[in-house]
Image (cartoon, rainbow, N blue to C red):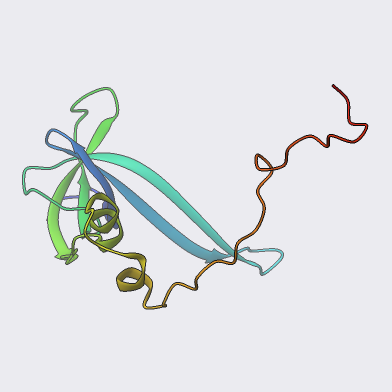
Length: 127
């Protein structure tokens, strides 16, 4: 094994070609105040494997590959299984009604006057 640092993190973006953004979370207790401190850092890593958003990956430091890339994805520790978002599909589909999305039947709304239905009073109103 070599002396390179190896860190695990979660892929938060894979929209670039052969590059992923990995969020590294660190939780520790403050030495003086004993409060739990949550820190996170986002780094860009070179990806030849083809990671998806949500994957837990192990990255290893490398020589500078570009202006911001200093890490390479070594292995995928845990794959994230993502399903299609039903809310986005349902909004675009015209044949889906609200009750199938929420599971709640829509109440019939009572007839209420709207602000554009009010007409000016004929008795002494401004002309």
